[in-house]
Length: 124
Image 1: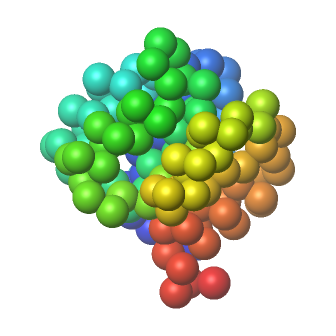
Image 2: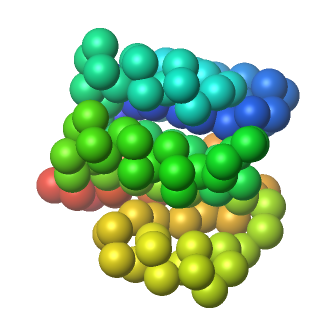
């Protein structure tokens, strides 16, 4: 399934640990961070194959982080996750950026399938 480095950014440690375990079992090397600055530094050090970002990441939101990540890794595939649907402004940005969204809660299989489909579209 997954192969390569995945950047996971969620400020809820319990959710982050759960997603990390699921994605590692699927074969991804997961770099998990709870803060945007740490995630950007990690992407600068080694470009990930995909970033999975909490849309409601505090304090500035997941889209602000995604912009910073794309400045470091142009064209980086993005998957946003959240327990609430994106608002109209967020939806417009996601569409414009070619980013994807999955609502929490999701199944482990569902998460790994969508991550693989986005990061490795030829692996479907």
